Length: 460
Image (cartoon, rainbow, N blue to C red; front, side, top):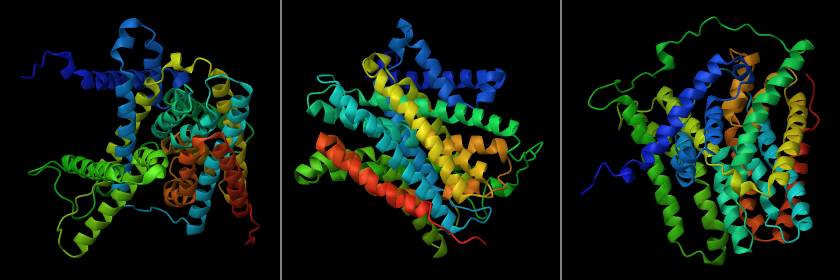
């Protein structure tokens, strides 16, 4: 018989208790301490850093379970992407298809550039540190941490650690990747704010009027024909059920692939990638379920609208907040001993290269809203899309420029452009020669993206 007085019955809830208390305290600090408010650091990151600062205390270190925090990070990533994929996409202002494709190309090419920079640092360090437990392919975690965030940094960090172990190396990939992701949030926020203030002093930013209050209508919360807020089942419960149903489909898909006999390639490359891409399968299956619901409604097989964008936004936001807190809290500094030099080099050089590359791309592609485009993209490519939106709202609070729409809609072309490169994440860590081949492929891909992004266009 289950004893609810047994602490094992509370283990998981204790981890969530720690996260929510840290979130509430961090939000209180951010709202009341001017330096944190001006920094634009997400409350979720502050909460994660707060837990990190308290972990050296013996009693608190015993409470925070690293394994549980990593699991929360992994599933929060997948659930958040499912919620975003289920939304009915509504475009509020016109954005050209070409501009969306170009923005997706900037995103994918930045991932490639970040990965290339990371490898240029880690491969020589591996050859230099003879006998050191350092992994040559660790540089590929830069785009996962900066470009994708804690969830993907953790997923591929774990995968890289297993590859390193198979080659007799001890590489704490999860801690290394999560440290890059946490640094990315700080870089995106602090560097973005500093550069914004420099531009303001130079008079280069157009100061757009902020609304005193934001006005919402019923259409912002629900669409025509939706189910009631509370009938036999609450509307929020329906959204949660849809998200969990799709995520159950994701699990069945990944588990099904795991049971297939795919030979040596499948065991070494494909199967680890399948479990690492939970966010991708969640996106694809979420879009499929949303499409099926739309078809059912058109054929009158479903009379009411069950999808509510407002609630799905809230679910996704909550998942990503939990992901950031748990991912940051899961870092173990003891596992980073001997890795500080590559970590600092990767984060510093990666930040500089990302800053100047994105700035150059935005000057070329968005001549009418160069800085709005830059801050939205730089925030996203060092943190998450939320960071990009936070920075953008500082100079374009009403989203009068197409920058916000570009940021939202670029996901599909970026995924199409970047997916072949993501496959290299399972190829490169198998051997040093594979990593060198990957570097060559990335150079070629970056040149192709450069030809497309910086091509000559007709001036109207």
